[in-house]
Image (cartoon, rainbow, N blue to C red; front, top):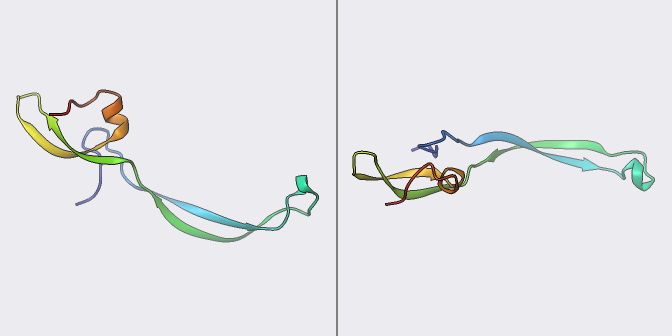
Length: 76
């Protein structure tokens, strides 16, 4: 099962780690140079919690902490 927020739709996004070599011009060098780029995932902070549904029932679902703090869901 994919880790996607049931409320906001947040999902993992791809990014990069950029490795640099050299001394910055600010520090007296000739500047930094990119030596390699590695792909990585930025994962949202999801919690597996019981949520109260509008019809009165409860259900466990993945919810982002941002949605919980904003009050978009009510814990059961």
